[in-house]
Amino acid sequence: MKKFIYVLAVILISSNAQAAIRSIVDWDGGANPYKPGDVSVTGENLKTKCSKMCPGFDLKTVKCPANKKLVSCHTPGCGYYNACVTLTDEEQKAITYDPLDEVDVDEVYNEIVEEQQAEKELNDTVKEIRNNM
Image (cartoon, rainbow, N blue to C red; front, side, top):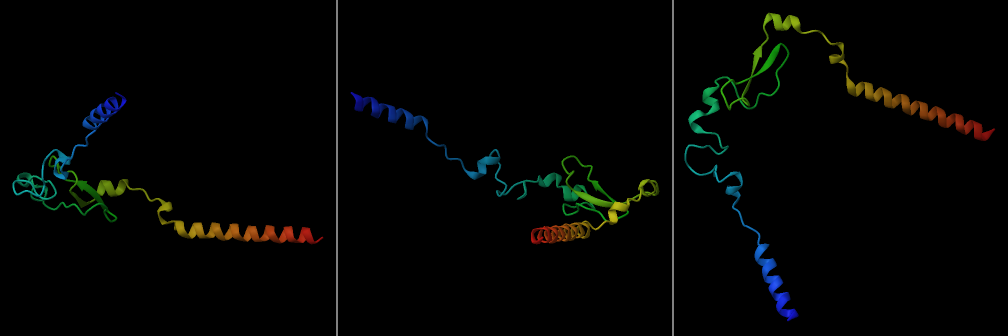
């Protein structure tokens, strides 16, 4: 009787705990981006392709040089397409000079490390002199 209950329990447990096998294509809701149709490999709808809807904008632009600002495409769903646009006169006047922009952080760090090392050496020398007295 104990064997029967054990076998029954194993069967019930194994039948409820089966792992479902799901295709990797179904992970995104079943849309296979590699099938031919109206969707590109990146999942972008070819009918409203952002590269056509946003001339002058691209995916690679993420930072702009001085006197330019980053602008996103205004087409719905294409906000990740960016372009650099020259600042207007009012925007350029509104920019204030920040002297901290010219600070070399690595140089400051190295100076601090050198000062700490010199202080440590001085402390070690003082301890050595006191121990020898």
